Image (cartoon, rainbow, N blue to C red; front, side, top):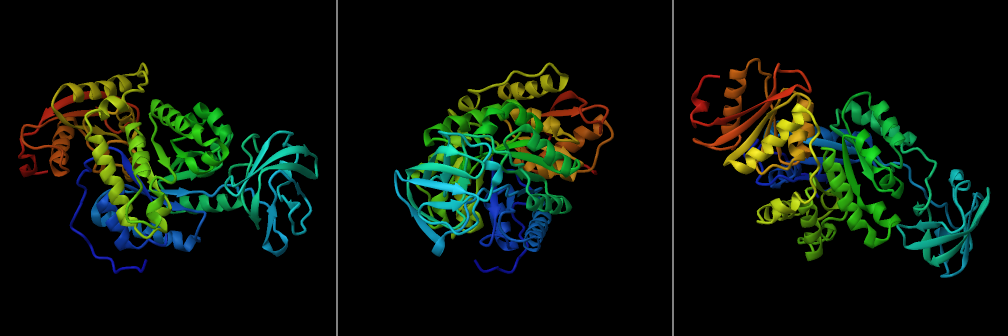
Length: 493
């Protein structure tokens, strides 16, 4: 897509969405210019993913600068997620660049660097030779070829081709039946992570997570900056899910590799399980991969894709993600538009509220959780138009979002980082604003911001949640119900 000269737009300056689930769109050659980024935000994108697997740092730097320029113009905090590539297991090369593995034939993976043929190929990952055992599977080229280990030694892995077919240079290898002794961060990932921190990325997507220690290592390298989203794409990660969620700031259901390493019928219940578990921890959860895949080339999705997006919204996911649809597809703006329409339609369904509360976690025995639960109960009992949350760290907003209240949240924070990070939080409309010093100032500011951002009119009731004394993280202890007079914007600030 050719870059179009960017023109400032007066539209969508901070006005709240008509839905609570968020849209995370991947930027790439089809969408990284300012004009397209502005259109994507106006049509429904709340956050952007920068895929570190493609492109160089100069390109990513320009993309991030474009997002920040449009963010400033549209006055809407936008989250940027830099998604690390993670280690990729690949076979070596073949004579002539390709070979053919016969169905049922034997095929050997070895440490010989010479080009392979129909009978063997180099597997340039010595750490795999010590862990594979008889009966375990190797899935090649996104599972198109399936090999079963017959015998494994320090130098060779003899396999039977349960599903054969053509194979070419450096195709990917998945090892679903073993814990692979490879760290989640490669040298490239470490460089990309340092770059993302320098660029003040709001979220880091951590690929190839297998164990909680992978998350701990990434956190150490982040040095307290940004938020970490662990991507669940390995069966081993599913087995350690609770510990991984606890150590992360958010979770992504990365259905690409997960769908390769698991049987197809296993993915939907695991997706629901991950969403439910992450919601119970009160952390954002994103459902990703192939949501509107056909829109890479087609201006409209399949009915099955529409149902897939709808199911993620019904499950109460915080966000749904577009990958190649917006990064390299022919219809990036249309893909976001249709995803927005699907989400709005689902959330207007009379059964939606009941469905997202099928899974409900008990509140922790804390003042903050008790008040967050009360916010949701009040919003479901009284004609409440919105919940105003004053927060520095964003923790209060996450606690309220966990309850999936009927009313949207207006999250007011002096922290630019918190405002941006909240762009992936269910039901949250985040606004960066000056800090407050008194109860009276809080109520007055809350009312003004509610009117300014479309949270009601004269006579509207709102719930206010905050902590006193102000500015101290974790001090949430105040819940107040206010009524708008409608003329608050006329009052001198």
